[in-house]
Every structure is written in structure tokens, then in C-alpha cells.
Amino acid sequence: MADEHIVYILECADGTFYTGYTTDLERRVREHNAGEGAKYTRGRTPVEVRHHERYETQSAAMSREYEVKQFTRAKKEELLEERLERD
Image (tube, rainbow, N blue to C red):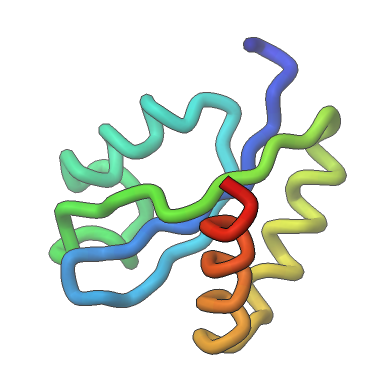
């Protein structure tokens, strides 16, 4: 969907988390795993999507991405747990 704005959390092979924004989650994960994504994920592949949220506007998604990037690891883990409980 062209007007889909997605904030996502990846778990890297070393157990760390990476938070990003995209309009095409599958493509972006492929890029990360091919070493063409963010510098942070290079050398930490393979990555796996642990969480994603969809927004109607780029502005809303990027605001949320910034917010999640400020979270501590513990807070990100809480977010992932909440998602598991809902699904």
C-alpha cells in the first residue's frame, strides 16, 4: 500500500534492537539482511522483525520512530511483550 508508513523494531543476530521507518517493510528487511540497510545492522545480520506499527502519515510515523528510539532496551522489551499478549 503506497500510503502506508511503518515503524518497525528489528532484532539483530547479536540480540540488539534496531528501530526504523519505511513504507515497505518486506523490502526494507531484505535490504537490511543484504547489508544494504542502515549502517547499524550491517554485520549484525540476519535481522528479524519483532514489532511494527502502521500510520496514515509519514509525520506520525517518524514522530513515533523518534519516540521509540529514545526508549531504553527494557522499555522496548515491554513494547514487544505487549504486542505478543495482544496477538
